[in-house]
Image (tube, rainbow, N blue to C red; front, top):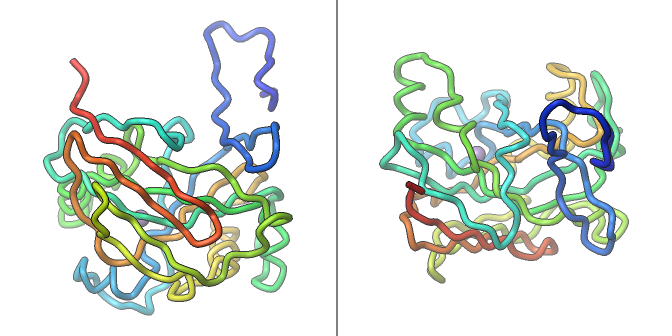
Length: 238
Ligand code: MN
């Protein structure tokens, strides 16, 4: 793969999935999208899940599920309970294996605002029946993500509000300081399961207040210091 996208000889068109970087003309090429399954106590309680001290678990979304700020998501098929989960996104500029918590920060290139869009009915069904999570989490357009704010500009995000409003009405509010597993702990844990690489994104989990959206709705997510992410919802295309 050629990170500039100016590549030469693929037999079919090949997109490089990339996010804009605030203050730069260059883009951030996305390799993998990892997501933390649960990371705020109040959301675990609203989902009626087991032990709040359970270790973090991870799932992935495909890189082509990214949706940019200002774009529209189409209401997905096979759900009637399409939910928003506002999340802090961590963008890695370096990789590593079995990284320790103390040096985990060295891997971080920057941060962004993301929404882990979820087919809640399919996720619950998968959980109850012991089936894979992909249908509930890893579908088309399931990873809206705003521009990357480099650490060099904004420092590390350890506290500050995280919110999501639908049609101007607040649905979710938390604080990054409430993360059960800190960003460094998440990176350290994840790097024991997978070799991490530059270009990987990590969605760090959602606070309470998840809920459904319908065609015609407009979501506005925000993390203090990282601007906003505005996404509209439209009906299924013909
Ligand atoms: Mn989530």
